[in-house]
Image 1 (spheres, rainbow, N blue to C red):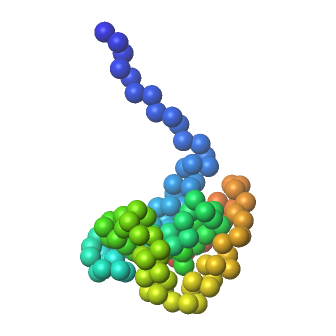
Image 2: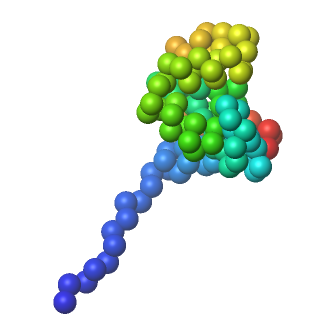
Length: 126
């Protein structure tokens, strides 16, 4: 009989900090009972307007989030991103769209100090 112990990879300190930041961001962008911005359905989850894979500096910026239901979130990422991103831009307004465009090229220095500073900032917004 083979010992079927599961081996889990231990998360690095950086991964733990990022997970904490993701949870904080999600709780601010999409508190409980927040409806989807596009269709009004519940429950919603936070969607990154500028994808977190494209811009680390905007990953935990509150203005870069919008609550979407799972259905609309799927449509935004998989069906017709241009149409749905245009609808999101219309919902959030020109000022916010411009802010996000201006900050797309910003950098986020991945060090413990910056992660902790961002955590403190987000904890102050919860």
